[in-house]
Amino acid sequence: MARSSTLTVRYSQSLRLAPTRGKQGWLVVLAVLYFVVPSVLGRSFWLNVLDYAGIAAIGAVGLNLLTGYTGQVSLGHAAFIGVGAYTAGFLGATHGLSLLVWLPASALVGAVVGAVLGLVALRLRGNYLAIVTVGFIFLAQYVFQNWTSVTNGVFGLNTVPSGAASIARVGGYDFGDLRVLGQVFNQNQGFFFLIWGLLAVLVLLAKNVVRTRPGRAMQAVRDRDVAAEVIGVGLFRTKVGAFALASAYAAIAGALVGAFTGYIGYNQFDLLMSIQYVAIIIVGGVGTIYGGVIGAIAVGALPQIISQYSGSIPGLAGTAATSGVTPAILAQILYGLLIVVFLVVEPGGIAALWRRVKAYFATWPFRY
Image 1 (cartoon, rainbow, N blue to C red):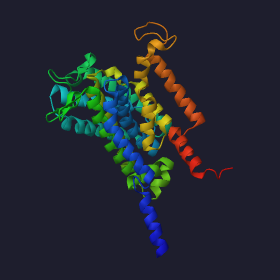
Image 2: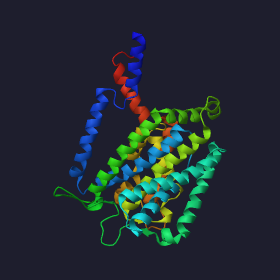
Image 3: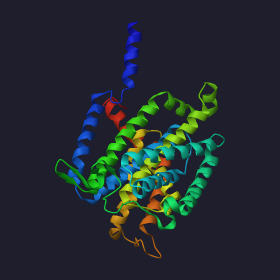
Image 4: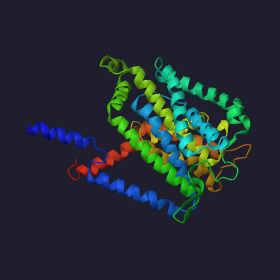
């Protein structure tokens, strides 16, 4: 009985989000950084980079749930991001609704669209599924371009209502021009609090999903879907649910993109954006929740960094150049190189490197 009780205690401790003092310390550090970073960086370019990285991290966590945990290859992530962006723009800018309305609505619409595509995933896998999701991007772009009553067609949708700093409003607070207790925060600072606070909640949700029965079902489907079905895992519920959840995360990221940038264009949500998210989870670590966050910080805001320092990069042409390597082309090249290098050298990404470093110091000096 004593041994059984000990095993039960150890198992319950392993399910805790922060079972060790080291992890609890990291949570305290992250909480402090959440409040300190906006004040330290102020109006700097790097705070803008962190805002974009936070948005990318939300979408990457969703893609990791689908690809890393469920094994469903998707190159259509950009389409769901576009769905969320246009939903937020239509409800927030066109109809003037609050953040508390357009953000959940974006997630809901994204989940419904993802569930529809998930029905296709029931009969496809691997390369065939990847091709179908690529086709979904072109279908979504066609809808974005031609559904003018919602998307404003080829002219794009302005998400900054007349006389308002942004659509990110909750009651009397606007994250685009945040004022709290006499303290005034600029747009980058206000959106940092919104984006990274929301990211923390969504990471916690994703972590709890993968630690519970649905998460174990997703991993069983990833490893061997036929065997998973034999032992009682419902493939319909698991695959469709994974697509719906991942799409909801992507739609939330898209909604934040629309609110933060102030403009939505149908050509933003293309195959390159999907490849960017694939690069993020591969570099960060496929099949890990924090890998999506690490990958987003490492490469998620790469286009903004390249554009900022394009004048200092030899041989890099301007964005309006008719020939030569532009910042957008350089970003594509780097995404491809990062995917190839990490798949060949370290398929587990930065997350695997971090685990290896921790294991090294945990066993030092008793190594051979």
